[in-house]
Length: 86
Image 1 (cartoon, rainbow, N blue to C red):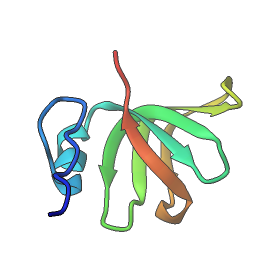
Image 2: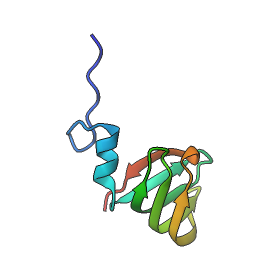
Image 3: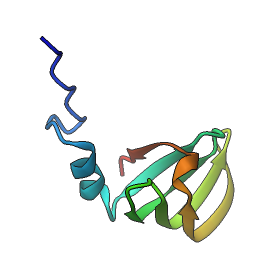
C-alpha cells in the first residue's frame, strides 16, 4: 500500500493548492534555483509558480543584499516557497 502523505508543519495535511492559498498575504521565503533567497509578503501567484511579493528582501549567502518593495519572480526560477515564522 502507498505511504500516507506527510502532514504539513501545522499538523494538518493539505494539498499544495490549499497550502498556497492559505499562505497568501503571509510572510514567505522563496528560494531560487540559483541559491538566492527572497523574503517578503506573498501577494499572489499563479499555476506556473510566478510570484508577486511585497516588502521584498534579497539574501545572498544569508546576507541581506537588497530591499525591493514589490517584486515579481518568474516561476521557472523557484526551487521552493516556505512560510516564515514571525
